[in-house]
Length: 367
Picture 1 (spheres, rainbow, N blue to C red):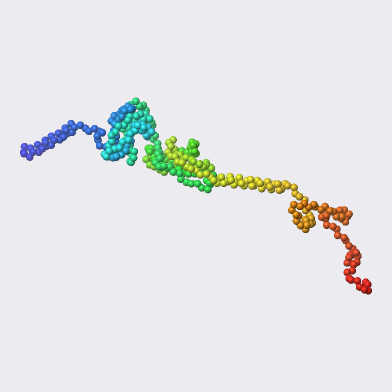
Picture 2: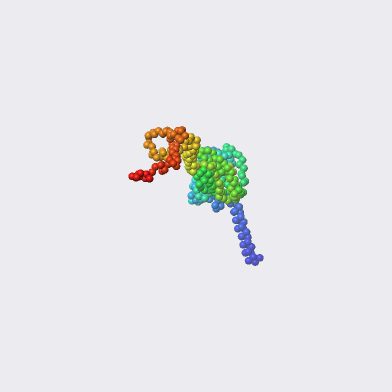
């Protein structure tokens, strides 16, 4: 064997021995625990010191990968927190602030949640970007029940507060039904799109329970998307006072909004005018009837009216008796005083112009 070939063979053996040593060393070293692995970026994690504990004790909770100096809440929740924080022991929760590296460690009292297990330790941020993690945990002695059936349809949640748009007009001032439009933004958290959803709109006056009516919104809310919903609201004619408008979807209350409705003063003005005009019209009608059915006095002759006018006005407050003298007529019968007297009749030979001379007498006598 040549000297070069021997060197190559020795080098190959050396490299093979080094590789064998490395493989053996790797096999002999212990594997790091899974919890010690660095969390993925943007995925904070939490750990519980024990998987089960009884009520009245405490359990160690730690975490890493959270936002530095972030405020967190720790709660023990039932039913895997399907119903939100309503299924958690909120009165026994704890708050903790992460350090500069986004890690924390604290003790959490063990309490029975209001819902049955399976339970979890829920860790979530209070302010800033939302982040949460749920760790399975068993509360010793707490009842266990199957999880409620999840809805596979569309689920709508409110993303912005409600708003009433619109205003009154002249007809509303005279008692027409007030109308408004209830608008709010919803998001679809379900797995399927919500097409033409039907909302229940209720109006309540004062302390009375709301009266619900179905209102269909024309549109589609895709899964994981949001949309602006507008629903018409109408009250009864002449309604006024403090009202509250509500909207529900799938039996779940979404929004509530107060509505102050003004009084229809036009109706009040109408009734005031009616109370004034109707009595005046009745009075005028009654006076017209009385004037038509009362007895009429006998008409006064023209001659008597002329004589009365010639006599001059009668003094106020002085009574004057009417004359009842009668004059004799040509037929020998008496005539009323107001009847004109008959004039004497003359014949041509007895006329005053024929028998009487108007010439003055002379000395010779008549010719």
